[in-house]
Image (cartoon, rainbow, N blue to C red; front, side, top):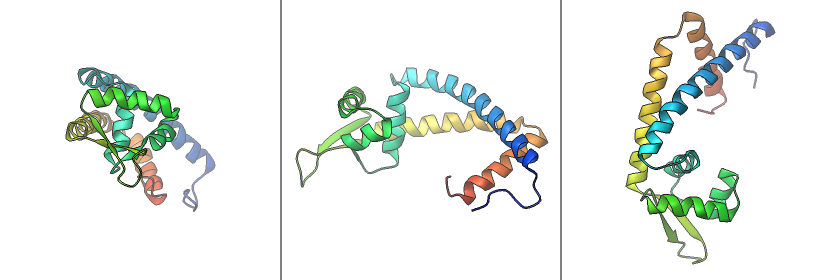
Length: 153
């Protein structure tokens, strides 16, 4: 699928990509700084929060799923789950068909944490987007359409 409209120059695409890269770097710094403060309040690390975000969109994940998504060994995934289970953000259950299979589910407390963090990130992004100049806003609109056309969003 072609994402670049006909008549759009390569230089224009590169300029948009460069502006988008600047935007991503700037927003990443801003969001991560605020994210760090919020995560500290909940006693969560970034990997723990990222795991919660994965779990928030799934019914459950197995330890193998978690290890694969997080790029960890199964033992490291188990340690990660142990820590956030103690905080009450996830729970474990055995599969009914195979007791060796551990299913990890997010708890209501975990869902609340993810929802809170998404709201904080959205607030940060809204502030950044509202301060954009017209050229940057146009670049973001092009990017939004490109992402939507690839069904990434």
